[in-house]
Length: 393
Image 1 (cartoon, rainbow, N blue to C red):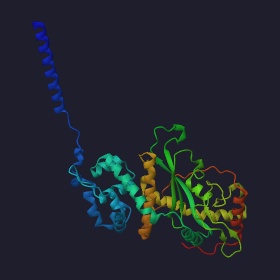
Image 2: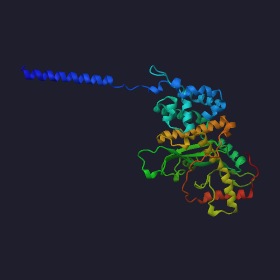
Image 3: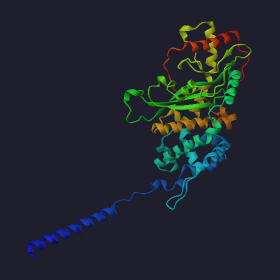
Image 4: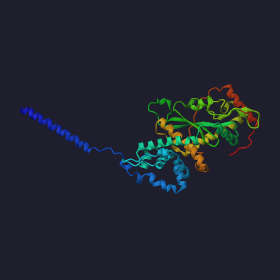
């Protein structure tokens, strides 16, 4: 081997050793990504749950303000869904208890704050909070629906009709329908002209009974909201007689037979099963009486939305998730609305519902059929000849 080859081989060997040593140094110096962020390692000592939960249980009023429900209501709710929230503790980390998971979800709904803010106070990761909220909301809907918002039966709708007659003096009414815009994170692939100037939204459309409980809810897409009702599943069910609406009955104290109907504001179309007010340009004495009756009856859906927004301020903020997850959160809040009314009925007045505004949904008013106009005329003539007798508050 000549001197030139020897020097070249020595240089190559030394260069390899140098680069290998430098690589090892960089690998040792580089910080290893941690399983849990440092600030979250002390969750069980410094997190909001460990500091507040037990103390709140000693003060029922403060617990109610914090969780938006009584202690008994919370315990019953936890008992119903905890099997869905239980996770296995591993050698790497201890699982978060079902109680803390439910508290995290309720605080998200009750404050309307971001996942990031919840994560900071509870000493959790942002993705962990998001996962907890979505899993808990899904569990709330799955476990409570059969009891607190089942698909209506004829017997149930008969009871609703009785309550509307007694409370609002509107017979043959199996519910009031309304819609509310819910702000949500805009999908990245959506053309800007298809949503409002400030916010993208989905539509919560609901049928409400006379006691402000949701009978049926549906969360629509964020497209043009003018045709919200006619493009909904509810419309399909009603058009095909699949909503279990009882057959036509005689109006009270009369020989007049009329179909059972929903009531709505002027934003909804007139159907044989859906009554809306007369337009202002067509007001005469008889029509005015009908409009007054229907306006009174539809107050329940307005009140239900106001209660929902006041109880769960997540509806006053933008929901920072995709549309599918947003639907899950919105439906869970509606389910909680029914659940809390059923369990904490005597405390519903704790939150003032008269000062909260929400954005209603507008719909295109297409020409009604002659059959739909005839049904409205039947109610109009009945109301004209049958003044209000009693109102049960």
